[in-house]
Length: 251
Image 1 (cartoon, rainbow, N blue to C red):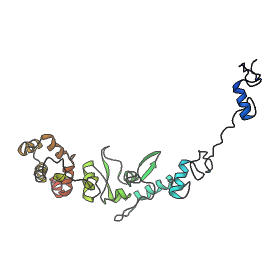
Image 2 (image 1 turned 135 degrees about the vertical axis):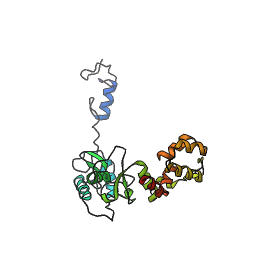
Image 3 (image 1 turned 90 degrees about the horizontal axis):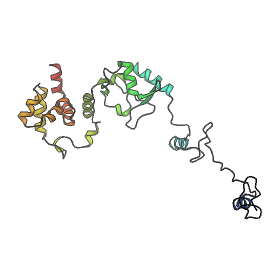
């Protein structure tokens, strides 16, 4: 005898039903019954439809609710943000910092979406106020030292090289290098500060790096790293001896 369920053709073992359909009859009340689909709750925010995570909201809106007390809080009004960029670029304020009031990066710099492209708010303001970067390697430097606090005052910003930006950060006390030993205090330092000072002064005077390396017994590659400003010790020296570097630029 086979199962009486249409199309089954398995041997009957539960009266006139096969084992599978017999179990369904016992569990669901019908040999062809299936469990009702599990209904998952959805986010209470209109139009969201996301799965519940907590407090009646999906994960995204629940995080906003926890952070801002409102499931729709914390978002950036990009229209207002772009208006703020334009207003800041045209500002006549010279002394006080203009602090970005919208979204910021983890480092404290403002973020804005310009034409569908996210970028630093300070960069967007500088581009309007001072024109585009001279080269792709130029960076937006802050003379006030408050870029990490969200300053977007165009009077406080200029296009500078990486070397100039790092020197500014060291001078303003905002460089990460200030949190670790620099110079001969570092456990990996090969040369004392007096030797580096002599090398840098000779380099700044215009002497060839190869000549400096030979006379001081320092590797040429290290002297060239000082000369190019890539070395953190060179950057720290330049920040502390800006008058020497300035004299060379004037000369």
